[in-house]
Image (cartoon, rainbow, N blue to C red):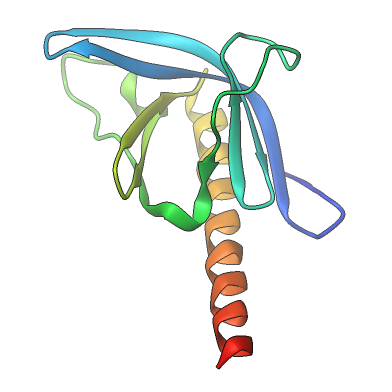
Length: 125
């Protein structure tokens, strides 16, 4: 895990995002993700230089969990979900180790975002 100048976790790389067009049609789209500060940024394309899509604000994330492995789908221990107020994202890493790194970084960043938020709330009281 790499740490940025504020001591926050930073991880970047390609993940596949599950795209659900209609109920029965699901596709995985490769995107380039960067976890920095209290945002998970992602590009529409596969490289750092493609234009940004709107980031996932960690303060809006309710939980993160590993997708349970189904017997018929051998590829899922490397998949995880991020739940926000209004959307659920499903991502798949290249392997279990990579998924573990992403989950650890996201969980640390989430804890820091919540801590920062509660500090800001107490300064206003």
